[in-house]
Length: 181
Image (cartoon, rainbow, N blue to C red; front, side, top):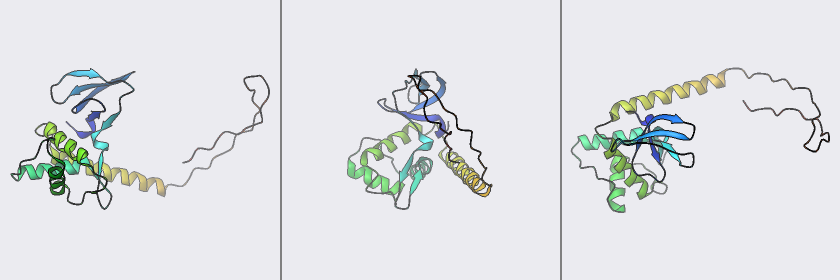
């Protein structure tokens, strides 16, 4: 199981694995009990691999935070579930990510994080996930560097043509919009 295949769906408890897609949404399977269902277009779906946590220096991907929590777990720490008070959540977050942004990371986010960790623990190799996340980040940085190094393409403008409006009257000639590169 990989973080890029796991989603959180607004209004639905727990985490879900993406099995496929249909015309009205995603086909999902609950990580907790294995029940399969379809999401709809109105539900907001967040892919765990795309989630980051704010730090004082910027952002840290969820894979790294999960890895830090797992290291605490292997070290004998008793990782809390999502049911803890706000002060306890802040103390644990400081252990897992010491430089987290105390103004922008809310206790509700911390509780959700610990709850998610327990759902995924034993089903995912957090160290392997962190390596994959880092290698994907390096590949993305290389692509950005390649894009900046490649010369810009020249664009040609199309001939302006008059068009008719819905009422049949001719409108002013227009040129197609130029798209940014």
